[in-house]
Every structure is written in C-alpha cells, then in structure tokens.
Length: 447
Image (cartoon, rainbow, N blue to C red):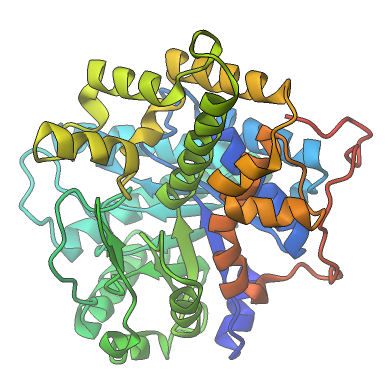
C-alpha cells in the first residue's frame, strides 16, 4: 500500500479498495477478483464486527485473520499479497461507558489487532464517551489517538521486533455501515477543518514522543460528501471538493481515505481516486450484492422445487429479523410495510448482521444444496441473474449456485477494481479468468 501511495503522490491515478466484510462468500469474491486483477487485497475488519471479545461475528482479530488467510491459501493468493486492516479502532463499542474505561478497552482492542498481524490501523476516537463533550473536539480526539498509537507501536515492536504499521486518522468519520437517518444533503469537509485535524494529530503525536511515526500516517479520513441511506445514494460531486484537495499538497506521504463509497458508479469512484481519495472503503454494498444473489437463487428454487423441499430463505430471514430486531429496528422507521421493504432491500443492508444466525445459515445451506443437485435451466438464470447469464453463455462462468453467487458479489467489486487500476502487483500483467482446480499448495479449490 505504501508503494501505491508513493505512486499516487507522484501523479499516477493509483489507489486501492478496502473490503470491509466478514462474510466468507464476500471474502472469496474479493480474493478471486484480486487474482483476476493481478493486484493485492486489502481486507479490513471493523471494531463492531471483530474485537477482543468476538464482536457480532464471534471472531477475534486472530480468528478473522485466520479466516482470510485460509481462504487466500485455498484459492492460491499469496499471503504476501494480503494486507489486513482494522477499521474504526477506538472506544466506539464502549462509548456508553466513562472515557477512561472505554479507552482502556480500546487499548486492548488495538493491541489485539496489531498482535494478530494487522498493519493498517485506523485510529478512530471521534466519538464521545459518557461524560464527554459533544462533539469531543480535535484536541481530545487527537490526544486519545496518540494514546492508542503508542499501544499499537508497542504491540508491533513486540510482534516482529520493529514498528512498521501504517495509520489512518481523521475526526470527520462517517458512521460505520451508512447513515442512520434519511439524508437531505451533504457538504464536503472544509479545508480548514481538515488542516486543523492534521495539525492537532501531528502535535499530539509529538507531545507523546511519537513524532517519528508521522511519516507512517498514510491517510486522513475526510468527508467527500459521499454517503448512502436506506433508499438513496449521494453521488460524488468533485466540484464541492476543490479547496479540500489542496490540503495534502505539503504532505508527501498522505492521501485521503473515503468511507461509505458503496453504490458509487465506476465514474464517480474513478473521480474520487483522481481527487486523492486513494483508499476506497466498501462493505454493505458487497453484502447487498450477496443478498441479491441469494434471493435470486431462492426465486429459482421456488420455480424448480415443491414447497415442502424449499429453503424458504426469504421468509426465514424475515422471521429471524422480526424475532430479533436489535440490528435493524432503530434504523428503519415507517409503517410495517415500509419496514419490511427496508429489512429486505435497504442500501444500509442491516440484513448483513443476520447471515451468521444459525437458522439463516441453515436456510442458505439448504438452498445451495438443493440447487447444486440440479442442472439450473439457463432461462431461469437469465430471468433472475441476467449479468451472470451473459457470462455463462460466454463460457466464462459455471451455472452453479456457488459460482453465480460469488460472481454477483464480484459485480460489486469490479467498479472498484477499474477505479483503482493503479494498484497492480509487480510482475503480474495477465488477467486470470478461471480459477485453477488446485491451489499452489496442491489443495482442491473449493469452499
């Protein structure tokens, strides 16, 4: 990533996208897209997905690392081409507690990530804890980030004998997973505010005796006025960021990092990279595509099997979400009918929290088993997954439920691959359109 940033600062439209998802099918799609592109893969876990206690996925940082690397091994992506990051690492999970208690837990969180081998660390102390002012202000945020930075440096030095993590800072951090409320309009971060954030963090790091780390601060999170809510996407308008683009002119090692870029068009993603948002984060947009694929496969199943043999995936998902509404009810206002649409189809994709649920996972497994036992008629693929049908007809894709689902997720990744095409891996210039039957280790390629 440092080489990508160096090339970007030298004038190339180089960038990298960051996959923020813990779903194995999404991770497989990202690995296979990386193999096709000849680049490297940046995968990040967020502090609510993965923490020292397991997060909502039940995985610690070491568990998630093992999941990603085992999938990379299985599909023949060298581990040296996998970069792991921690997103929104700070007191977010414990912001309802007093600051000192929340920060002590955040220190444990950062240490767990770095000790497990994560080397891109987003220090996010932008949220207020119990008893804090609202908002906490750049000085307090920067001082807390410096505190977490010290922990990260110590953990990295203990792990490999040196401290070489790269860091992301910023106080204008979009809400993880998209906006909670309906959006009316957005304004890009003012240039003066971005400069103040940089100055406060640089000073806080120096006050903590960590000024030598500053050259490894790789990115600043600012708002390019890009976001999505439940029913709409706010597209990038580069006219509103012209002044902001001047902020990094005197920072030879810094680029912008853009959060909530999900659902942007290829053209807008390309403009973001050209305008120095060289790191593009994407998460809900990938599980949204996975949901589209699985729901489409469920419609195909409905056409092919009697009712008593079907997975009834869509109904199972909705029943579980109604029985356990904690992940969506504070996000989806409106009538019962409006909430039903939002639960199933919202851009915010709160449904993604339910894929690990035992009942939902069992329904997905039954769906895939049912369809794997059949030759899916191609007209049904055309009806419900038309982009995948075109690739099947071209001989590029097998009409199996697994391959159809993975390719649908890759459709959400392909715009990012196109926009960040400057992140090619040295010595690789050939697109891989087929996955080998065995990995480099000789193991069958299968999930």
